[in-house]
Length: 477
View (tube, rainbow, N blue to C red):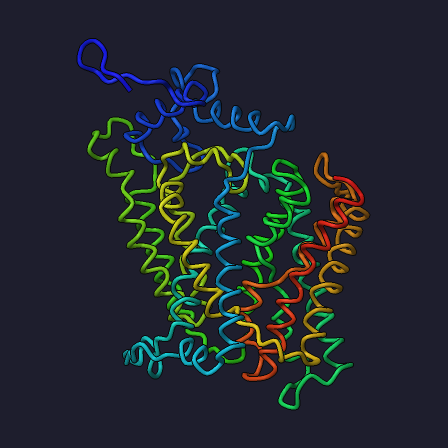
């Protein structure tokens, strides 16, 4: 670094500065641009006048990022933070497993530590709410993670070039539903054939194998397919849809919950109000002050808090409490793919919120692994086999039959460059179940040995990931 004429510091430009220079210039102008919803002008500022046919500068940057990955296919690179999420989750679960096997008493004392007792009015919640690390991480902090993946699903559905826009949602939706049906039916059949526990009734715990794990699916999928393969994006779509739908099914079917659905008026009202006041496109002639206000994040944070409270009070899983506010948040008009690295150049409120959550979500996933991922190595029991059979046989078989049915009835085909062998690897990877099944354990199964046996089954199911890597190496990508 040296000082040149005019007193301005000059230095050598870093590598890649010319590639993304226009993108950073677009960011400065986008910070004062009005927030938009579908059908409005894109929040990533155009490189030229609005009527110019040139693509937005942020899209140019995204395309260069895709080319820089060395993959000739028109896929966008997935941001590396998803891999960090997976490592954080596995790190927490690894520490928890060591802890619970070396000192089980202290581990369970930590997980069930009574941090506070909240006596709420009866019209809000019947009885006392006990705050424990187990409850705080699962019901409060994990809502941030599901906001993060819910945002990706929403963008895939409604944005231009979204992976689920138009008629492209039918195949992934059909595979998700058929896979969940296959897992649930296999659980019911196996638990009827194998006596799992004396306290277990008919079909007890069928909700456990419904979910998968988004971040671990990405970790194994990236190694199996490569960073830019279309099969990786299909895998992520299926994992996200499976996890969110599994949580909804768990909430609606849990026998331990008492529903007070009138509380759902609160998230609907909060989302509607914040959309009307901040999420819509400002009308022509709006002042610059009003336009800047449309880019503020605090209104969406307040609406999110109200939404979470309403969902939790209604009896549905509080983990999903932030999802209702996602459609109300101003967002860009184009999709660059699931967890696309190009989204770091967008300055709409939805993407800015996602950027702010990256580090907190990594910490949350580590804590989730710590409080939910401790596997007792002596807990092997019949429930372990039922869990493995449901994830390794039931879900892949259900998805395979679903794909066959969709092809025969609707004539649906796999996305371009995704072949049957890729679909087979996807089905193997989706045999991994951890995050959402671990949430379902407490609500779907009797406490004690049966839960711990199922948790061991979830841990063993992760071996499907290395199996998929072996199959990918032996058969080629």
